[in-house]
Image (cartoon, rainbow, N blue to C red; front, side, top):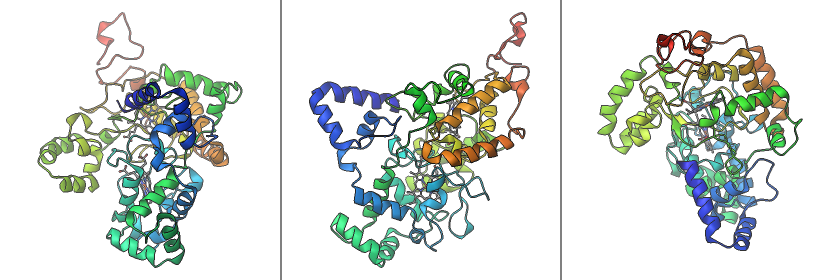
Amino acid sequence: MVSRSIAAVLLIGICNVSPAAAQTAASASVPSPLPLGVSPELYGIAVPPDRVPAPDAAALGARLFRDKRLSADNTVSCDTCHDVDKGFTDHRPDSATSGGVGGAHGTRNAPTVLNALFQASQFWDGRAATLEDQAKLPILNPVEMGQKTPEDVVAKLRTLPEYAQDFQRIYGHPTTYDDLASAIAAFERTQYSGNSPFDRFMAGNASAIDDNAKRGWALFNGKARCSDCHAFNSVSPLFSDQKFHNIGIAAHKQNFTDLARKAIGIVQSADTKQIDELALQTDYSELGRFLVTKKDDDIGAFKTETLRNIGVTGPYMHDGSLTTLWDVIDHYNKGGVPNPYLDGGMQRLGLSENEIDDLVAFLFTLTDDRFGAFGKEEMARQTALKNTRPQRETDVAEGRKGDLGDLAPNPDLKNPALLGAY
Ligand code: HEC
Ligand code: HEC
């Protein structure tokens, strides 16, 4: 819905104003040139004129993003979990989910901040509407940056002369918590990312990606069905429909269905604050979008993440449970993990080993050149793990085993019993 409504807004916008006026409005706010593959139309919609980042605010935000003094004990910055040099995700080796102050660990894996400015909502469950709303939360979260109140943060910032002066100059008054969020969001609105081999291929350079990756791109849109959810087009080139789906990751947890049953009762009668507390609890975190909407359909549903820079943003999924892109494809190949809320778009794919390799090759072409060297390192690291495949279930993927109730990828038409469930 969201991506469609973005398109609709765009069309209405274009129809209602004269082309000349549209061009003036666009050129006033859209940076030029944008990197190859970044959509000026989407930028125009995602960044309204009053949110266009002023260079001095963005520079201030960049410093704040890396400053550990924003945390309660001066040990954690945004950059700790969203490493600016490594695709803006958490590459610390100790855990698949992110650790914050005092060694505390949250339940979720840090997504990249690259292109977050274009998203319809923030967080795996979409519980923050804007980058400003989002930025205020980790600073106060006890397992992230651990500050007690916004007032504590502001008081600390006001004692640091280099910040106090800049806030005064840019915002015209002493630092507030809103200004802090505004500066960080200004920085994040400069973190659009394109310029990948795939973008050069789409721009007409046929040799920008190799034949394996080209076959992978075809599979992505065809047999592998990835584009059903990881939608890509020139106006919205994020590889995400911006919707929420249960693809069965939460169902890895043994008690998932019990939890869901229990939560339906609890959540219906809970107030906003109680819901928030539920969301922070390890187990209830797995219910995903349901905690925000309270709709049964959303149990275990998480946001379709962008696939841009996916080669450098592992581990994968909301809980970081999949280590390599081979694990990711193995998960999809067997149709996900069965559970009562599994998205209808999840079906066994029957991909061969060569086809899996082609899809992985394609995904590695989505890395921005600015992370080129790190991308090569990550590809080598993942390739070395290629034979460790905890998610691989070839018999299920190819339809010889399993009870998903779907149509096997290569059904034996002579034996009707072999159509669908076994
Ligand atoms: C302790 C690790 C940690 C710190 C520190 C941290 N984050 Fe995050 N960040 C995460 C995790 C984990 C998520 C996903 C949480 C969820 O979806 O419930 C996230 C999500 C986000 C998102 C949403 C991205 C998306 O695709 O939905 C943005 C934007 C973001 N963080 C920016 C920031 C900023 C700005 C700061 C500093 C003020 C910050 N983060 C500090 C771990 C961290
Ligand atoms: C039914 C919708 C749907 C389909 C089909 C789908 N995906 Fe996803 N994808 C998602 C959702 C939702 C998530 C996040 C799920 C979670 O964390 O629980 C996701 C996550 C991912 C991630 C991890 C993102 C990250 O930052 O951790 C990768 C990689 C991925 N998908 C690749 C693919 C590929 C390749 C295909 C085709 C084989 C595919 N997806 C098919 C919806 C889908």
